[in-house]
Image (cartoon, rainbow, N blue to C red; front, side):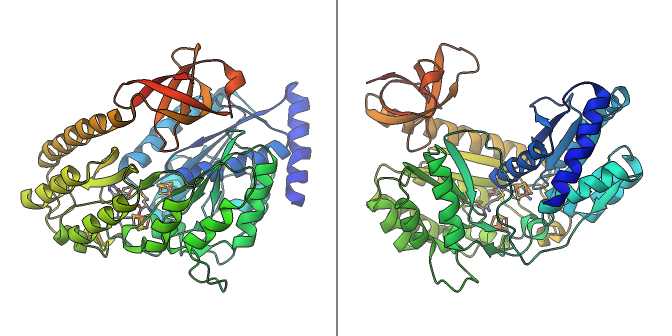
Length: 457
Ligand code: SAH
Ligand code: SF4
Ligand code: F3S
């Protein structure tokens, strides 16, 4: 990490000239993977001597971008204009971009021609090279650009600054090999690569000794963990190892692809006290015909029978999902199949997305893209169903006393502290910041649909 030291000297020089400590802001778009990458970027920036801040009137603004849907991209372009006005007023200001959107050649071309004020662009595969690239950006004229198409290696031991003291994401794998036909992630994140269980467990042990009580194991398809490693350890096996780490009280994971969810995993979940009773199980569509076009490798019936097997072992489990409305060729009948699954499963909550055409994916070439007005009607119907069912389902815990991990002071009312149940539901309780990071039993007095009010028992 010699470049971190070289950067630190330059940052020190600039700070002395400016007569103040220079600040850096990393803004994250997209998923938990990006959030974790941002923690690594903040770790590197802090070692370079920057003070890490949350506001974009900083001396370095780094956007860690997402490109999963068109609006994720539009947001970035929109905000870059604003950053340029800030840069004109601050001679020390640098603007850098990284993340999934930068893996798209058209995006980089557009930035090179129309957003010349950007100082540095890098991608998802060379994140660890940020210090060296930043050095180049600080010492050379013009825009520094380095994007790799893929990478074979996983670079361990980057510095990190966690957003929360008491909980942390932990990458267990990178990339994705599933190629769902609508999805750009495999193209921008590269092939699936698992970290060894030794690396994962040693990171989790370090986190536990640093006060972390909850870990979220991260991967685009955690159920295929271990593919390509010689260890022969399944995801369920990995969970068993994580459970043994002393100090870790809660284990979450994201995301589970239904096609690879094993009975062994259901067993481990059902018998564990630490693994949270929550499963995020993306459905995408309830129509077997559309699922085939999506390349999801399961049918409506497979999905429903999987849910039955899960509920049979864990009747109270919280189920959440992702659904796409308006995939090319989706008919009214196909949409009714999705509504049918939603009614039958009764999700606790669901993320619903309007299909977004991503250039380069197979679905973008399919005929019969669905008109916006048709999608909108379907989307509203789906949202209403999901919200009504979700609110009804949360009632089942009202009156119960359950452990809550307290996370932060409520943003609207500072007399309240906000925490989460094992199943990820939000609970507000009267209290102060001394509770942050603690797990205490709370009686859930009122249910307000998406959250509970409670009292410490
Ligand atoms: N790996 C995860 C999902 C990552 S992307 C999984 O397979 O479950 C998160 C969600 O974004 C997906 O579940 C999907 O519902 C949605 N999504 C992905 N591509 C999309 C697109 N082109 N249009 C709309 N939604 C999309
Ligand atoms: Fe995208 Fe499918 Fe991979 Fe999830 S599993 S990231 S939806 S290709
Ligand atoms: Fe977006 Fe990349 Fe995540 S495209 S959803 S930030 S993997």
